[in-house]
Image (tube, rainbow, N blue to C red; front, side, top):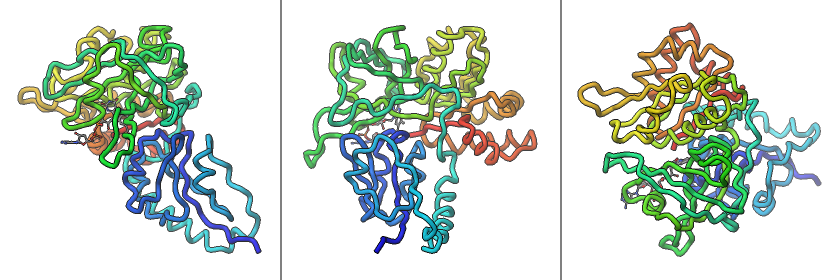
Length: 395
Ligand SMILES: Cc1cc2nc3c(=O)[nH]c(=O)nc-3n(C[C@H](O)[C@H](O)[C@H](O)COP(=O)(O)OP(=O)(O)OC[C@H]3O[C@@H](n4cnc5c(N)ncnc54)[C@H](O)[C@@H]3O)c2cc1C
């Protein structure tokens, strides 16, 4: 007798950035990983949906109706998700429709924030993902490490990693994983932490096989302290690249509205350098709202001053500068007409990157700005996301 169809929760290995947040969030340890993939155990998952809103990419939000659930071993070996199998007519009379409705409601709730299922820009280059894994990491050599901030309480470093003969085909907007040395209290090797690549695809130095990272030292943080204390010549184990959606359009006419705080500026730097190297000052379509506590805490403050306004319109915003405390959302409101005009242009792509706490304020500002042009932000945002024009990466 054939098994009745059932719904299985899966993770898209092409989109997953291996940040392991879902695994750390799952209250019943139904999510696990091997060297290659993060997967859901069909025998344990109870569809609680706790993992859905914490996923930065939406790769967690995959479901298949199956007669025989895909085993952990099968999922560990995937490089892409299998298509939905055609299960024939009896799929309809198993109560799955009712289950679908219940799940759709849970998912809608989980996606209520600015996150959601991301899509790459239509003109983005195809990203390579998961080339180096936990079991087979790349080894990179530190060829440069410089402080980016003067504020001792906000130590951010620019770190250049050279991969020598190992291919590292990263696109702007992707991240790489860094495996901190050593093991945890149970003797298990530490999990990698993700860092956005802050250099363009042809290298920090053009046509060198190197990438740069923008790393903030976190008090008590394992990997960020390891990275910020590296010296030139040290070797680092690297996984990735990861991320197949938070990418820049290759279309030189695409306009980019970039909203970031702190190290969220890393991908924006990569986008800007890519544009500068490809279309230069002719680009004209990049607008950035960048928030930090003070100029001394703003990574790349000095270099940014040298970027021509024709290439990048900069709104640098400080939340602890004198009496005039200002957050990115305040400046966006102050520049309502400018932002509204961008939102109405079908060539505009929105990128939001930084600490998770920034999302709420930015969402509220975008809601108000959309209202000013008679639009409902959630509808506009979802349409932009479906068209691969709205991208959020917060951590
Ligand atoms: C997609 C993505 C991209 C990212 N890009 C970047 C980037 O470009 N740059 C960047 O800097 N970060 C980035 N991050 C964050 C990064 O991956 C790490 O989470 C961050 O560096 C902290 O890692 P850690 O190992 O230092 O901290 P962990 O050891 O993992 O600790 C986590 C937190 O707990 C706190 N903590 C731990 N132990 C103690 C203690 N004893 N006392 C007090 N506090 C403690 C730390 O302050 C830290 O904030 C990104 C994350 C994601 C998901």
